[in-house]
Image (cartoon, rainbow, N blue to C red):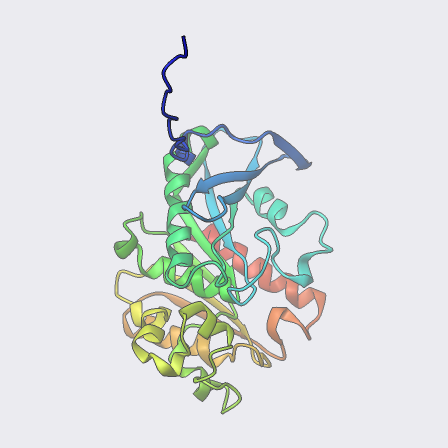
Length: 303
């Protein structure tokens, strides 16, 4: 007797796991007193790669460590989460291990690049990374309530935007924000570049981030600009920018400093004489001074 046919059951993929419930990766020890967790998943978007962060943690001490969240640059188009820029690649120990030596835990997150998603996806990814740090703080031995954001170039733009819009994204306010040579007013780039930037060019890094040229949608360019989100509730800022920067003019940091001061927010603007983008054009000693100034700012605002 032929058994009756049983209709196939359609296969359904299970829902993605909650990143907060995933096991932490095994630890490496790249330097004395430093524990490194590479590839901690913090967000999973449908149709996109899992977003990960690296965690540099101190191995000693009884009190939970304050946190520096470092946001990499690359024109929102490329970049590596653990790269502070070419001037730091030869440092031994590296900059993140030095931050751990100074008493911090350091988180270096991925975010969706402009080839994957348009703004504000990148800012929302950083907010998700901060939520994970808060949610797993006890497990990690960190004090996420004492967090400073630190970004360079496009990462400085994202760090500033994230620090200024915590009320929009629903995350805890941060204690401070360090910005190295970051864009702050996308609608003013043509003026600040003195005509060398075409706001109607759909192929610029800024246009690829927005999904349209800044000149074609002034409202969208404004919404993506940190200067448009400054309020009296903003955290303290440290802005470092080279006077010879032809990629992001120093006037962009001046604009953000002016907006912060007008709102009554503490801001320290340091214009680094002769420095090009990525701290090119200045000595190793002056690069180390920029790093040291930033560490001191972070220490001062997380004690």
